[in-house]
Length: 245
Image 1 (tube, rainbow, N blue to C red):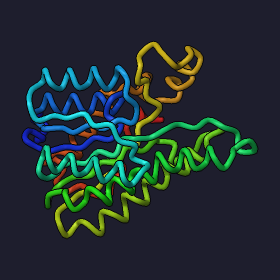
Image 2 (cartoon, rainbow, N blue to C red):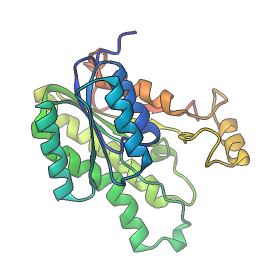
Image 3 (cartoon, rainbow, N blue to C red):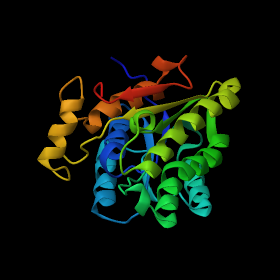
Image 4 (tube, rainbow, N blue to C red):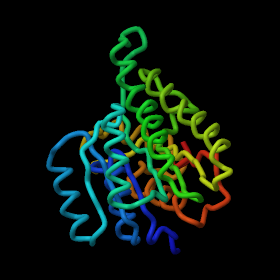
């Protein structure tokens, strides 16, 4: 199936690892031009830049802390310089948090909310004037937004906020033909064979209807669909990519 994203101009935040990296490379393979941002100078960012260079011209990897307005403004200026306008914005930046509620500190609350909610607000508000009419904004949420998670009240709250953000914003930008949707993945094994103990994988798999853990490519397929013209009448929607948890 043609994902209908060839030639589109794309910004992906948190684009050097996991779901973000897979998304960036998929857009490039499909013929889009991509700016990816990251907050830390490391091998992941350098290797992504090399892979994008090998994929062709018109791509850029930019360092920016998207919880800071000045960094976000600089990032959007770079997008204008490199791409002119944007057709697609993917708000992928996010952090996890695993703390029992009685031990949740103010600093930890703000850390998660700033990365998972405020960053989406900052990037979207700065980028919106550069988004072409008929464009697409895709926010990456989580399936816990509707079902909750023990030891993750702040994380669950942050992802639930994205649902309201998406549903409200779509009503404000719909007159320009801009669509706003959110993808809610289940727990995703962004580094196969690493990070998740076998017992955790077994427990997660047992909760899914499809009997396996989510992979980045599962989420990427949904991102490309919502970014492309095949979803031109879908907005304000939450697309669950959780294997039927």
